[in-house]
Length: 111
Image (cartoon, rainbow, N blue to C red; front, side):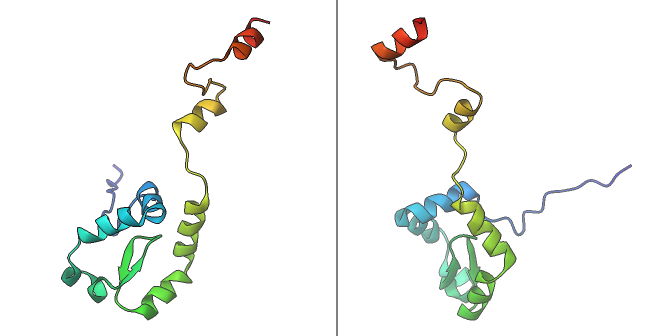
């Protein structure tokens, strides 16, 4: 019998959609940071990597992290356009106009 694999949540970070919202809106990031107590965070919450959603003990550790492979991979993923239901529907050939059709579209469909 194979061993049971469990998802490790100890190092689980915020999802890509949440981080993308943090980058797009400083208000969203501020709301997230307000939920954390500075006394409980490494370096009293001063050194934070937005892309990876991690706090660091010192500026040196943050800079070393920014040069690392995991950080660069995450930044690359965040630069890509996120998938939406609209793009998924367009990929399979479904209409993405939400039922709004102009007279020209109706004529083209009848022809």
